[in-house]
Each structure stands twice: as structure tokens, then as C-alpha cells.
Image 1 (spheres, rainbow, N blue to C red):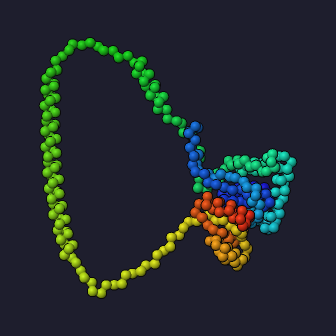
Image 2: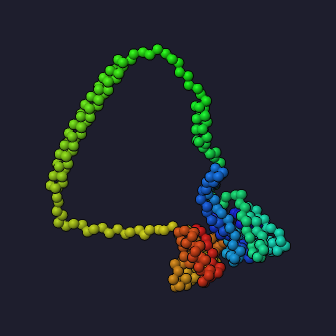
Image 3: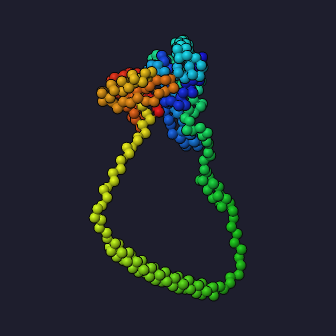
Length: 311
């Protein structure tokens, strides 16, 4: 069974997809990027990474395979185990494992798994329809140099002609200028007078309005009691959750929430996932950075199998 196609399908909706006994594929959203050296605009996308330390079975991949392949959950788990055995045998023989639409995995000199992402598809659904755009640079300086060179090459030829007497034109110009100055001065004077009259009228109207307001004073003998409106609590958008475990029983999930709250966490039972399990979170966060930092702290101090999910 080609389980990599099911991993790719889940990465469109989830931030972490774990392959039990092998590792977890993680995604992180990268904003749109402009490469100034190549004049290329790249749309936002999900960057794929791999963590070989997260190997616990959260039920997500097996449930998805069981649903898509129309087999039982146990059969899906068995199929994943066979695929992992095949992958590990290929890696231990010194070969590079190529996973379609995800990347390449191999052992380095220290014996650790090294992942090189290769994602020709964009797993960010919000970026569907957005493609890479290459825009040529604007060559302003080059066009300026061409224009200057053309001006240098174009000769200017002066044709001598008889000098004429245009002294009368300067008197006409002086007359036009004086006429324009006089007209402008009259217009400025008229506009200033209109503005002053408008200001006086507005001031009188404002004084009358103030007199009416002062006269309209009412005394209420039996005032109505002030209405008390309930304040609606602000609902925060906390999509990132650090998950402690997932339970098939809703009662067990609620019990785990109580135990975590007793330890000081802001635990909650999340919505039932497609695998039919109830995830229980330590806490929820608004940003990926806060959630990831808390997850790493919990792994070091309390639960090394804690993972991160997005809802």
C-alpha cells in the first residue's frame, strides 16, 4: 500500500501527521516571498519538515487509511507497519528513501535520519490558484542613458535671421500682468469679506442653539433604574493545541481533563476527530510559536509523547 499518498492528503488539513514507528511530518506556513535577485514572486505555502522522535500512534493516519481503503482500523495499522519495515530496510541498506511529494530521507554519518524536503505541490489550501510570478526589472537608468546618448548625437543647427524689433510686446506683457494682479486682488478681497460674513452668521446661530439647550432643562422625579446588560465574554481564537492523549471513551477524556486541570493546566477536551477519538489538550494558544515552545517543555518535563494539532 502506498501510504505516502494518504500522508499527503492529511497534510492539507493537519499540521502534524505521524507515521507510527517511523516519525512525524510537520508543516509550517511561510508567507509570500519576493526574490529580488531573480525578480520572482512566490505565493505563501506550507514548509514540510520531519521529526524522527515523534513515533507514537495518534490514530490519525490509520483511521484515514481505513476510511479511504475501506478496511478495518487494525488492517490499516498492519499496512502502516509493513510500509515502515520496507522503508527502514531500504534506509539501513544505505539507500535514499524517496517519498513522493514529500522529500528524501537517508541516514547521515552519525546514524541519524536526514530529511530533504521536495514538495512540488502546495499544501496550503488558502494559496490554491496562486502561482509563481516572474516580473522583469524596470530598467529606468538604462533608458535614461539611451536618451542622453541620443541627445548628444542629435546636432542643433541655428539659422541666422534678421533681428526684429519686438519692444512693443514688453509693454503689452506689463499691462497683462498688472491686470491679472488687480483681478486677483479683487477676488481675494471679495472672498475674505464673504468668509467674515459667514463666520458672524455661524456665531449667532451657535449662540442661539446654546440658549435653547440651557433653557431645555428637565427634572425627572422618578427616574427609571439603570438597565444592566450582561457583557459578552470575548471569544479568543486559539487554534493551536498541545495534546496529551486521545481517548475512545468520552468519559475517560473528561477524567483526563480534570486531572490536568488539577495540575494547573488549562486543559480541555477537543472535538471528536475523524478517527473517532477525543483529544485532550494541556493548553491552547493563538500562535504556533507559543504552542511549540510549550510542547517542547512538556516533552522534557512530563510527557515525551505530547504533540501539536490545529483546529
